[in-house]
Picture 1 (cartoon, one colour):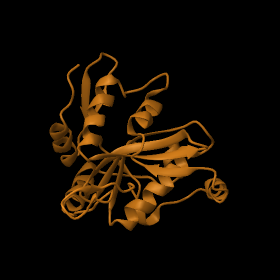
Picture 2 (cartoon, helix red, strand yellow):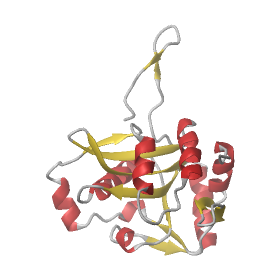
Picture 3 (tube, one colour):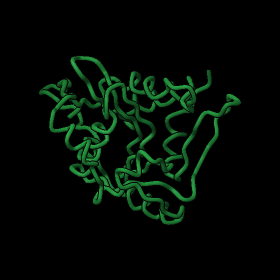
Length: 208
């Protein structure tokens, strides 16, 4: 199985291009026009989701089960997340550029999302739910994290009815590329770097 190298994926994202597995078994590369984004400053939490979140049903974790999240996203009748995509993004995660936001209930992964973080941009790839609105809760926490850490662009690639509930808009590709270029000039950190103890030993810290 030939993987997409992390460096290739990073170069593609920096140009507004992303891969998807095709029915033929080949990898297609896409740069939609118009492009779908969720403006962080006007992100909308639907009333029902806001009410559910007040119940604190799910524990949110970051980057503790990246491969499981990808598997959850791929577990549907039609999917563009084939084994090559899963292995390639796992390697990208290992390089520090791909991340998962996970919803857990009683120690079980019940939903989440994953995507790619570069500069001040986050490229959302896919999400899944095994419990009511688990992916929506993960999305709210993603947006809170992006805002807190200075991100300026949340790219969802395509428009869907589900994402439009959160304030998604479509913009022309040239406008998107201008916003992407500005976002890439920022130096944002999706997770905190490891802390070093005296002597240079790494101290294990949570992803938050």
